[in-house]
Picture 1 (cartoon, rainbow, N blue to C red):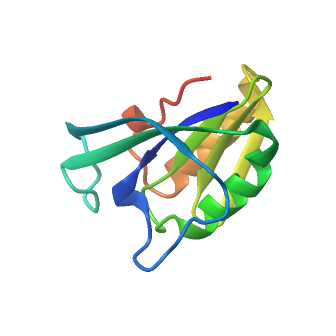
Picture 2: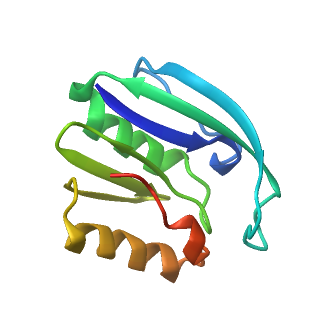
Picture 3: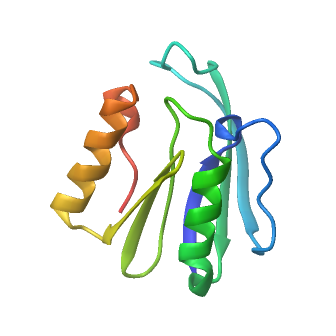
Length: 121
């Protein structure tokens, strides 16, 4: 199984994620300290899981659904971490520093605050 978190406010208006069965494992609403200027202060977090065989297709679909700017989502399989931005997917072996650094650098380049570049491996 793959597991991840999606901030629902990060979805582009009119986008649709379909064809990949996701299981919602938790839904929560949080107040965010240090949100970027273009981000709301309240976020809805959707923790999910899915069949690991769907990982690349899910990453590609999420890349087409995310708003541009200061948003990303992530998930991981038993072996790989996926960090997804609008139209860009980073995939690297879990725990690999170089892969994580490349994804973080991209996040910085689109204005994501440093404290938000904290996904779990």
